Image (tube, rainbow, N blue to C red):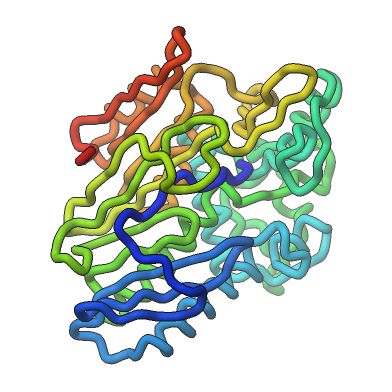
Length: 354
């Protein structure tokens, strides 16, 4: 699924120069560049021995590893080389991401499909920039795409010598080279989880990790739960935090991922028609409906990432039912109303403070 523009802004965090760090009441903030944007981490240094410079390097090494493995824009990454038809030796990270994504595809009955990348290309939101394809092109692209054509586990496709060509992933009789993979629907959430796991191993308990998506645990420097603003999903609201619809407050204890997906920042208008970047892999066409944005909290940022995308694909009513059916998820949905306004719905456990 094509990556959405981030709709969340960590409230009450100071703006600092990139790649710098700041200490405040035992807390440090680190920042840098990654994945075509910026990242920031704020954490409590209590009871950990690692100095900020060491932690910064550790985070940068993790993000570099993710970029050289999972990025579809880095032409030298394992994913790009696999998509290009090269034979690679897949890392454990690539295998794990493939297997996780297959599980999400199966759970969502095809609504979140990391092998549907060419559909985003033909609509102008993928690695290439076509737009408004005719029905024949949509049908042909769908026939060649999708996790339905691939084996459930990458491990079973790896040759005895540890190497993998994408032909080995294909289990049907169609194009033997198989679909192109694109992990944008889960990669930034996965990045948050990976950095958070690294900080936990160092002994960090209070943290907020922002790498496009957000994962947080414990308390902020004021000794209170972390707060994250949810932007108002209005066309033209392109500055995170400039126009908030509400503020979510964390539990203040265990970790949670929080991700928003929406259609108001990444779209184009062609022949008077607004085309959003949320493509439904089951139909091949942009998802339509009243849902403007979906914010999901989950035990991991990768899960929140995938399920926020899922909610946008299935629409308001189904998204509401889905969130209510899951004890491990909470959600905040904003939809358009017939009079041109907006209406909000929050699940009982979604902690709104504004």
